[in-house]
Length: 283
Length: 266
Image (cartoon, rainbow over all chains, first blue to last red; front, side, top):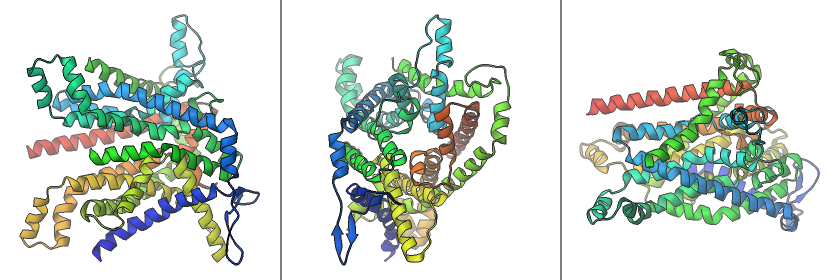
């Protein structure tokens, strides 16, 4: 009885606000777009009994028009590059934090996390101001006799903004794992005559591989659906899934197509999501 | 070598932020153009009524969503950590974990579709339905926050030393007394951390809020986003400097309290 009182409120809430919306999303993806409010014909009708009046038109559009396929490929590619760059930057940072004097570790970790609390949008604003045509970076380049270069609304700006936004997510799992690692293994390897590089390659690195995979996926999964950063920093012609979905929904008011895009994104990310959750359970 | 890596990473993270804070004090109209020291953009920010209204709305939504998330999320974390295997555990764990891994656009769109259908149903039954706005954003943010609180609280409960509660029970304390005097104080820091996490996530969110909001609900991130889309205003720099100052004070304060507590305990 007591257990039910504890269990029911969150379970009811989650069924209503997580499970039901996802089911509705899946259903609307099979609806036919139409005029009216909301702008679709419900796929399940009622005429003396339930009647199926849905269509797979939206999925047909997704498969037929290379525009959508390109958006998916570009999203996955950008997310992959972002996650790889984050991992590359985060690993030495996490090693540095774990190797620092004990009294320095928490302040250093906070220094990594504090930008997260500066707000996501203002940080993008900083990049806009830095990379603009008459912006700060071009000013500095101008002093060196270079430029002005077109930096904003480019792939460079997009990736800088993505890595900057997601880097703290990659540092955190790596730093906690490296901080907690059993150093006696490394000491033993060193005692047996291994050079520092061999110790790193044969002990530290394999030990931290699950955390590295977690860090990679922690960036890759949200980055694949990212809307705001490509919209504010990326090249206007570079469509990514988040932007395409947003456009279909807000500009074209094609809700079934937006739902189909969301569903397709979810299916594409599902292997990564399941793998990520398995890593979490083991660690 | 690792020090160089750490220094480079920190420089990359902080250089744009510090430059932005510096130029928030510049008098020039063009952002990131030095025009001498000035506080005019802070004054402009304070005088900007739309910005102020949006900020109050955002703070109210964030506080409400974080509180709901803390209450529901700690119940979910408790059930996951303490109930052992039970029917529906996988369902609860899966649903509580979903908002953590779903792309924002998917969360936003699916919640909006739910709200639209709910509005339609209410309209059919009652002839009236509440509009979308602050309330729908609050429901959405509470759901996302719930997931984060559940993780934090579950992790804390899993590492709790069971002997403390057993000792209290051995001394004759009832389940409620044990919870109030032993368990609650021990998990209070993680409740606070979960609340703060849900609060900041809500204050930072623009995608989900844009989907589920109606014409009446414009939050601060939605306003800043539209400002950034048409071009940067120095007011955004000033706003960022303010937010950073508040965050640094909060983190510094928490650090001081922790350090004092550690000293007191040692």
